[in-house]
Amino acid sequence: MKKLLLTLFLTFALVSGANAATWNAADRVPVVGEQILTKNSLPSDTVFKVSPEARNSEFIDNDLVVYVPETDLETAGNDNEVAAIVSHELSLIINASASKKEVLGTLASALTGTSNSDAGLWLQQYSMNKLSEKEEMTADITGVDLMIAAGYNPLARIVTLTKEQPTTLELLTGKIPNAKRAMYVYDYLLYNYPSKVKAGYNCQEYRNFLAYAQPTIDERNSSAKKMKKFEEEQKKLKQERAKQIATFKATGGLTGWDASYTILKNLYESTEVK
Image (cartoon, helix red, strand yellow):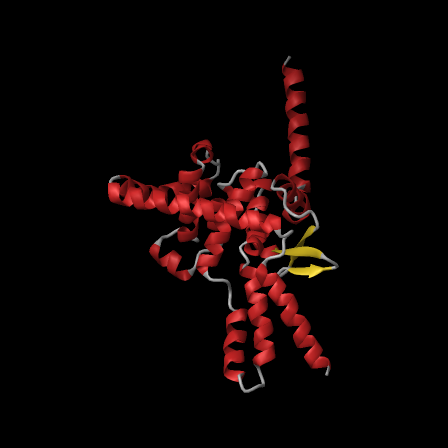
């Protein structure tokens, strides 16, 4: 009996070791991406590609290409965490944040060197800046909606955020990385998907986050006024996210900003040729 148990244990250890050695976050992006598209009934002509740097999405041969930064995938240790990163990038497109940057960049190119050069330079600088924190946070919660529909644990978004390298200020103050964004996701899930929060997520990063978040939650729970405000905000956020995803589905993945970008790009290129 002991010999049999030992054999079974060794077999399990070998299989587990082999699986751990072959799992790679970048390799899982297309598989996880397809799952998110299918389960959310999103346009199937969407392609996910791993990129060594952050890049705007683009249409290539009528396919929407979503670029997933390689550096972000370094925080992923399983498919739930890959889904958190992939859904975030897709959500930047669904919310039209990425498309808006492209439109402003094209306008900047058209205006620079003309009588509107000052406006062009300002737009160029703005379009090259990183997305605002608010845009990133909105994409975070749109992403967890997509994750839940696709069968992934949405708490993984909190984990990937807190796995990132802390800033100097975070190190000095003892805050966890991306504390504000992680709390935004947690609050959204706490109100709209309480069963997902109750199910939990078994890793140290998530436990660290809970320790950080609990005083804020306790303070809010002790105030009827703060609780009412919290509930109203979360209910509104859920309605906004549902509307944004429905619009994206209805247009086949083409937002108003995408249409504007195509028109502006064609006009600019035709002017350049002349």
